Length: 137
Image (cartoon, rainbow, N blue to C red; front, side):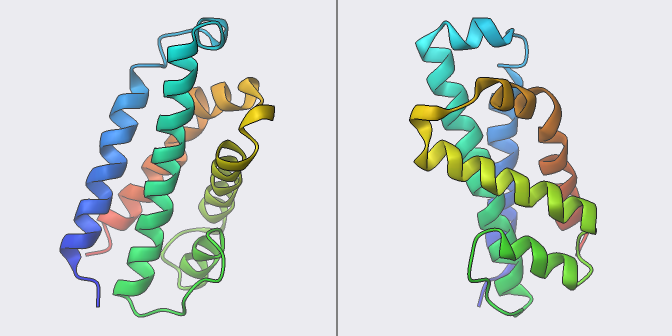
């Protein structure tokens, strides 16, 4: 059985990665794409942030003894069905899971317009998700 400490550790990981990503918001898309180190770091930290968020969702599901998801994105459907997150937040987190999958598996074909948009405009959904989980207890 998962305890609250595991959830707190997952939340801490997400916060850590979000803080790192904040440093990349100062750069333009071109400055990131033209610099291999920035480009690689952005990809990696977006991936880690998204994976840590998915891990957090699965940890909450285990803690609450809910049905086990068969896919990563299903965990957000379950949390919505249990009224832990809203439908809109569930859909945004499912999109983030898709983005994580593209980074992990289709890295040769990454669209940096999308990644840059995630960096600049979509991390707020991860922040909202974490805030919702923090307010559960």
